[in-house]
Image (tube, rainbow, N blue to C red):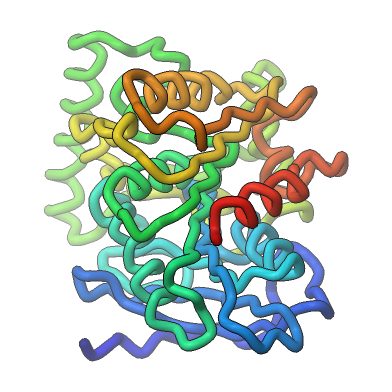
Length: 332
């Protein structure tokens, strides 16, 4: 496979400080659709033996320089070889047109990361895990149901992107009529895009935030539109996905076979997060009639909101000690 030559930023441009405990390099790998993906690799300094490895992605509409990179670097400090990657069509990764999403291709992105790690000389291929944040938490669970090479999965502050696209927030648009109107608008937009030869952007996080906006809109603004989490390549920080970018999520549900996952899964979510119902419901569906429940866990973090699990929210909300214990127990 001849990979596309990507233009990668070499300077440190993350939303978090660089650790002196790990070595950092840029790497590329490809998925089975031939799309070249860009990643940051973090390796514990002075590590000599083959290491357990973790691939990290998310949140949905973010880039590897944001939450995924923080998770990856922190887990590398704790002894794991990690990569944080940009999904297809976003960030520094390849794929045209830009700012598209796909339940299939995005699941494949995680599997491609496992391909890459499995063939890396520094990695023990029998000890590979994944971490998905926000919408990539759902993708991570979907990948765990498909990829038997994955020994442990963490889904953090997860969204089921198929559910929210088809049913709206809190399932408030869960009717055939509401879905029809949404599909009608999206198909109208397809014609406009085809005529213009470009794809209209849906807009990123609302800025400025109206006073009467729901809390979760303010929560996203507090991360993506401020120094706390803004990044120039992040869709959510800027123009957002294409209007039609997530269209296929409406009738292609993920997590169909989550209750057949045999490997270890830790789902963790903030108690106060607007999105907590995604994790509670996903966990319930995963363990229902599943004979492999002994290695499944739902962790609810008291007082935490959705973006607290992006960067800690100034209160160390991300349970890295718990995550380290989980991966050490299951990547062996």
